Length: 61
Image 1: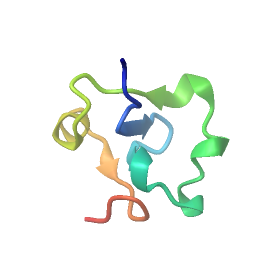
Image 2: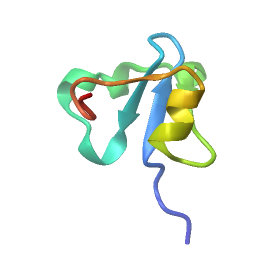
Image 3: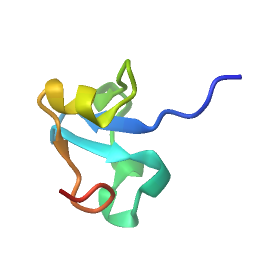
Image 4: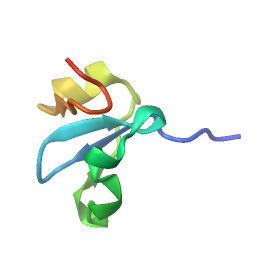
């Protein structure tokens, strides 16, 4: 069984979101499909190594 992705990056804003903790302020539903970045491995550290910043709403600092 494949689980849901934990982190999703927005290529336009370079923000990474934690999907299990997303808030309406994240506006993930407005993100275009071509702007979505998934991470392998699916970790915050990997996203940050790809120059994504934490969303203040769902991840914080």
